[in-house]
Length: 169
Image 1: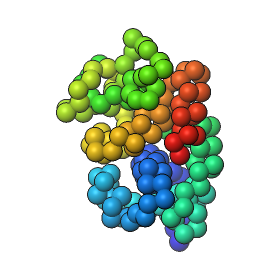
Image 2: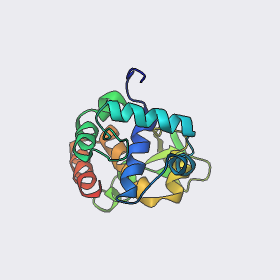
Image 3: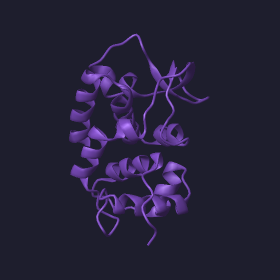
Image 4: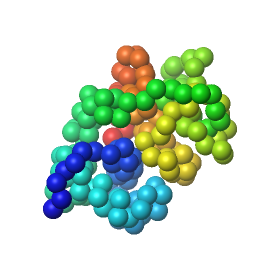
């Protein structure tokens, strides 16, 4: 087995996609197709996540407590983000559901995407295929928007985001 050389941003995307599956059986090829990430990269990601303790040894069961701990305490340091220029895209962080119901702000954040219907400050998604994958899966969109609230948000947004993530994962 290869040595663990650290997590990559797409690992978080893949783990959150697995979380949306709940008890439903899934296959690597399905994750690959639904996320727009190659099967070999999905396989490597599952290996990294298993070595990090985010997946069980069989690479099928999500270690929810460990994942939530990583998201809450480590994500913003491992994959930091700062908002960029105003652009068209898909809403994220507190600009997207579910946080947009409890937080109103003049600042809007979006993942840059030509087919997006919102304007706001650009936020680099964890993987380039995130907007397309989220267009097809609103549960995944909610989880990734909450993760961006952890990466970008202030204390209030982070507190609300972790509360929502605990309920959803």
